[in-house]
Image (cartoon, rainbow, N blue to C red):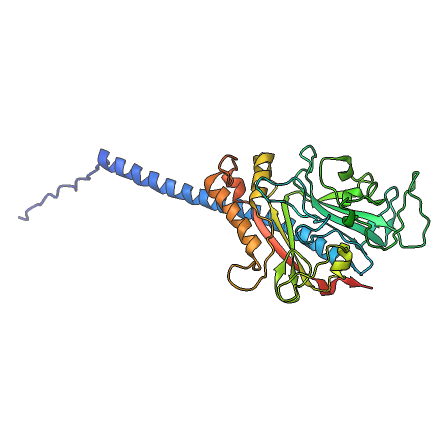
Amino acid sequence: MKKQFWIAPAQSTCRAFTLVELLISGAVLTMVILMVAQLMNTATAVTRTGNKHIDTDTQARIVLDRIAVDFAKMLKRTDTDYYIKGPAGYKNPNAHGKGLHLKSGQQGNDQIAFFSEVPGYYPSTSSQSPLSLVAYRVNNNPNSTTYLQLERMGKGLLWNGVSNSTSGSNVTYPIVFSSGQIANELNNKPGSNNPWSGPWSAAIYNDNTAKSVDQDGAYETIGPGVFRLEYYYLLKDGSVSDVPQVKNNGVSQWNFNQTLSANLNAFSDVEAIVVVIAVIDPASRPLVFPNGLFALMSDMADFKNANGNGIGAQRVGDVENNWNLAVQSAAQNGTTYDGTTAFPRVAASAIRIYNRYFDVKTLAQF
């Protein structure tokens, strides 16, 4: 007789998670979520900063390309007047912005005005002209809607021999080349000669007076984010200077009894004009109070004239480096150098410095 064996069914075991296991799982999940969130925040911040830099890059390119066109068509002649920077102590003009400084000796934003063969518009018509009075400035009027923004003038002019109608509804300005048109610098009175003291005075004035307002509306805002403008010269001996003339054995040949045009001699000693700008992106600018932007602008030093050779001399890039240090200080400390003027760190981190060299050889010659 065969024996029967009975096999008991396998018992199924069902265990629940312990409290410790649940706590550990929750902690691990929380850490993973935090790590992912941090990565997302970092990626968002990088993207936001990248977008801000794209905005400033785009604006800087537009401004510098416009300057390149104007400079390329600049009339480079000995009988053409200019409003540019000259040596310290020289009778007006020195083409620095007036009143823009917090520190002793700080003159602030530069100005420049010259004739250029770029199309302009007659004041009271929509016609284009073959010649323009071009000027660049950073607006210095705190009451203006374009305060601390880069403006460009493109006032249309006519060549010699046309009818001179400077009154009434159809105003035209025929141009006759001669020194002392833009500013009567030898008499230390900017714009003392008409029409510079009247309808064209805004080409050289940049204060809160009526002379700074162009009656024809020839100024347009070309760089709403550009709050600092400086330029200097790369001379043909390899030095950099804010005086457009090569020294002879270290001695300046500038004649203080001659006009700027006579000393300049059609840029004969200048190899290139170097333009430096500071740009804040549109999203960050509303975060900054005007006095904060003014203070940071004042922390960005003017160009200091030097030989350009040897230790301690002014070198290419010194201005740009100084400006970058001022921006980095504001981004790290949340204030400007004086320590009393607040500046949002996020706004400071979005400011960028740009420069470009404009070869004088490409300027128009006649």
